[in-house]
Length: 259
Image (cartoon, helix red, strand yellow):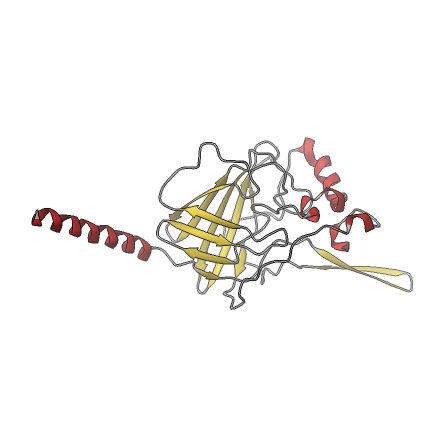
């Protein structure tokens, strides 16, 4: 009996040691990170003596380019849609104030919401916390080797599973609904969308890069430009309730930045 008890205790300590060893092998991504949601480009229009100038403004708070960071994959600024769908994308973008679900308090979804504001890294799961006007979503990402759920409920944030490839945390996401855009400018998708997020440390900073695979609408996978996130001391705050009250006041529907 005593030998059996000792064997159980030894096995428990060995298992705990294995978990700690696995944790030690990977960087700790836990922490609060700078806000870097994808936001539409704005433009400042000036007219002086009949001369019109337009200055584009980046509102995305991405803290500079991450293109030269080690590990960043080659990217393109925009997805490549199948030729037959280009007119639809343009029409959605041209009338964004009427067509974009986010303007009407819809969820931005993945990868449009961008990297998380806070990460909690645990032995068997990693938790992503966000701040967004449509609500403050969270994602619980299993890292224990389980596969995707066989029949997940289609959703804006999909069904996520995580794993490590060296020092890079890989989040594989399927199970999407088809009622979100995966980016600005009318980037619609179907429920066949598959997103792969890559997250890793660059010194004290965090790097996030996503790839969108969508065989129904894209001519090829889209590797998005990477974003560099700095550590933040700002605490997460509950976003105010999103109530749409501007649509009836629109003078035109070309872009919801007029709100």
